[in-house]
Image (spheres, helix red, strand yellow):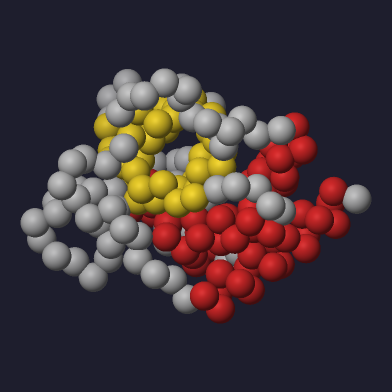
Length: 171
């Protein structure tokens, strides 16, 4: 696994901070779109990355919530999965707001988390200020993990704006 350089980590952190200064908040629960935007931005900086389907878990002392790959028997208009952008030893999730919008759980809008360096069902975890935990797991076996296609014009528009903003901040 490629470990990001300090310069690449700085770009990822700038992406995290700038994301919703550029991308409209109305897209904050669209994981396939937000991950594809992150992917396009990182590609513009020549940082190797890929989409990574997963489940997003929120846990605290009294609650457990899961987003992604649940209730696969009932077809819905909405994709039944979750996806993040993986770059080297980190994941970038710009759709954690699924937890807040759908379940009322307060979480950061964009999370960058270190990936585990060993093979396990758990991909990554991030401890929140309230001692709750966000965890990303590989999807269960037998589910459709291919994220839906998203409008390429939107991806190009917002990835270009983010690239420009991050590039200006770097100089």
